[in-house]
Image (tube, rainbow, N blue to C red):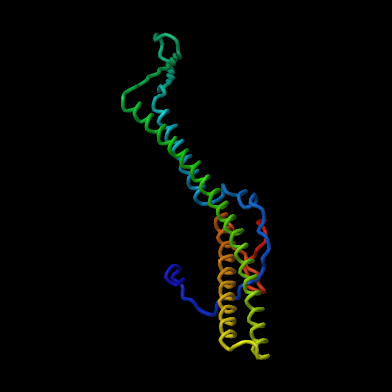
Length: 223
């Protein structure tokens, strides 16, 4: 954590919760996919490419110029006192450079459009994958908790039998070792579940919510 974040790690690790609530539906997590930074950046690049392509088309349009002239005089013998004239001219230039720029702009806009669509698809796939991982980790956490309970009961039975003289000390040690290993597996499963829930919300552009009382990552559905 210190290497990745550059922040000093202080204090004890927060306690893990034991909530095994089902994760919310997938739809709310995908609803705001257009607001994700990667998708917004790809859309901005698309708009920039389309604007550049439009400017290339503008270079092919004819240039139109207009003029207006008025002459006023009070000198006698020079005809009417006021004369005016108006003119309109259009010029059109076409060369290979303009055509090449037009094609290049169109190709760049198409590439940007493909990248924008790809960014949207990747974001949706990442959210769906993270959502599926949460459900897989949830099943693992439930299985680990069941194994923990079974191993704890086996250790208690071994201790009872040892007290009654029907089991050896080695059997008690082995049962307690298995119970400890099962509890470690339960802690690991809970940790992976909490991380999967946080990763899902980060993939959806949401901040992982933390319960103030237990420091457990919130397990409710997205708003």
